[in-house]
Length: 140
Image (tube, rainbow, N blue to C red; front, side):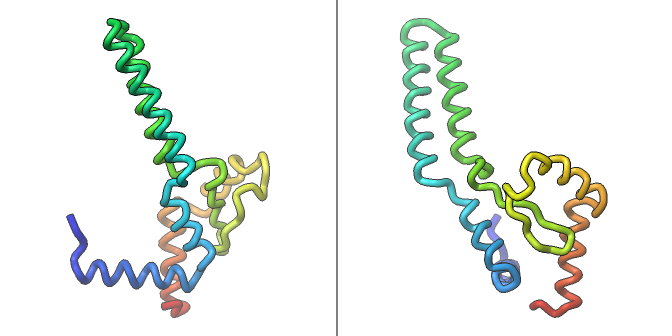
């Protein structure tokens, strides 16, 4: 269902506010939503390989090979359009609103995220806090 004209204007206004407030984060988000060309080429080759396996399996009455080809195709498609790859990780949002780079904390990254989320509330609560802070500070 398409957005109404008012909703589209509000979304555009929020995008401009985000770009003005944190241009680096906004550009990272734009870059992370598009799959990379190399990733799509590899995925295309993987899809062709999976299709080949499925066809060979069906033509030679090897059902397990056909199923394996289908599984390969689904897995490759999921991998191609999954936004989180090792190089595309955006990092974490700190309680003060700053963004910490992904590789900065090393191996303790996973444990730190869990502790941080328990201390500062749920993801939605933190977003609401940041939203209210922006409204109070007049960041529009």
